Image 1 (cartoon, rainbow, N blue to C red):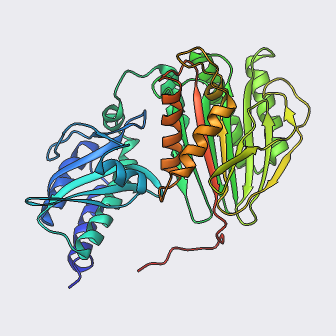
Image 2: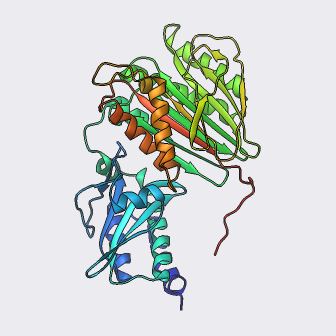
Image 3: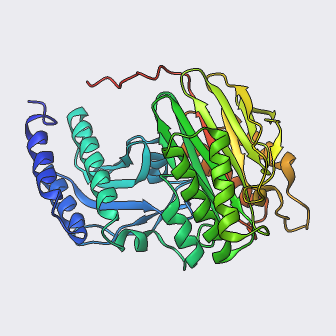
Length: 403
């Protein structure tokens, strides 16, 4: 009998039946209990830290709590970045690392050891990891335990606000994928991004509020709220900009503003339309190389009571990526005092693209953010955000095949 069906269905069903009313602190022992029923041991649940550099263990009864594992250089990190099962043979069996996927967003990794593994085990454990990821995301809203586990240093109030605003950092479907990264993770204030996939239209925006600290975070919060309100009301790009412009001007007065990219991508045709509100021009990446900035008219920043904006357009090709970033990326100075600049950003992006192999957009955004930080000598004196959009060109009515 295929254990992923008969026995597996009963195991997963029992876990699902109990998950609805399970308090967050009992998730860990329940996971360990279910893994033991299929012959697994030494279970660890690893969550990505806010700086997206480490996978840190979730404490809990029944779980093994070891040292954090580097995302860039560890079996757990490989499972996380490539969203695939990684198996490491040991003298007494196999150590397995299973990505915890909430849709296409990587929550973390579940690690466990088994005496041996076959295709039935892989299928069953993969499904168990998917259910565990869903439980973690669902219970995340009920407790502070998961927030606390992911923190490696104190977080500012402004950063607390921004992280509560951000959508899942990665979204991937056959037609389109997006991924973003923010720095400094524990002190981010005025930078933010948002997106939504509504049928065959990807809506996306990147924000950079003037100033620092709580004032910038508050402006960014109002901008994101106004953007979502206008987007969900079905307004077009120009009207969305105008609504945001009025909201910021009315709330903060004429001396405050936010630069922004507001974009719409038709996931069927690849037609990209955007409004650039005083923001750095996005970069087009084609055939694994930056071809240059997407030039177009620049509207005054949001909040300065601007005239209706001019909308720019570009036809993408399947596989194209669009890289949006905030001023903090290119205006930082390295340890020698030199301005980082757009050309160094382009060189870094090209290096990442040449070596990306079979890794997905999550790995691309993370490696770019980490490379930029190293190139700046670890300095991040201002908010620095990168946001990638990849158009894949698949049919919008594509459904995954169930095997």
